[in-house]
Image (tube, rainbow, N blue to C red; front, side, top):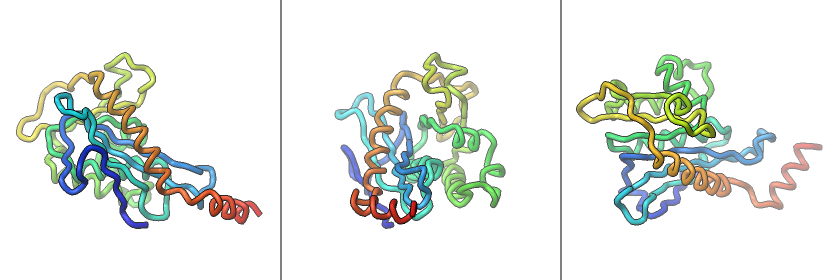
Length: 205
């Protein structure tokens, strides 16, 4: 599958993500491994801009589609366009656990999607984000219970802050916005209904 992007309120060639952003993945037909198709999205919140949100989204490339790969690919695309400092909202527990445990844990060859993890950690080093990265669960620091696995990564280009930043309402707004676009990206990857129905019948018989 070709790398396809849909840009919302921005141009893919020149867009940069900074300040408050969020990433998300989606998966359709996840119960049928051969028919599962995923999408990804990245959204940035511009408090002083009009419109307030800019986004990129699209279908997950390749043939191995899982929800974790969709989430990781969204993070990778964000890092490709990121300009520190930024804070990033992610709502996938496995991605959070990997970022907390570090590069050695994520890139072990037996780890699922280790190829994508290696690209992510390369970009984090390239951005100088390793020393200035703070990862934490919002349930420990913020009273928004639905987002139990919410996290924020904050990087500073030249100076590392000693304390973890407190999440604010815009992070949850951007997380809701990016969720919608991730589903749109997944829809772009789905087969037409008739083809999907025929493929499903052939798999079940």
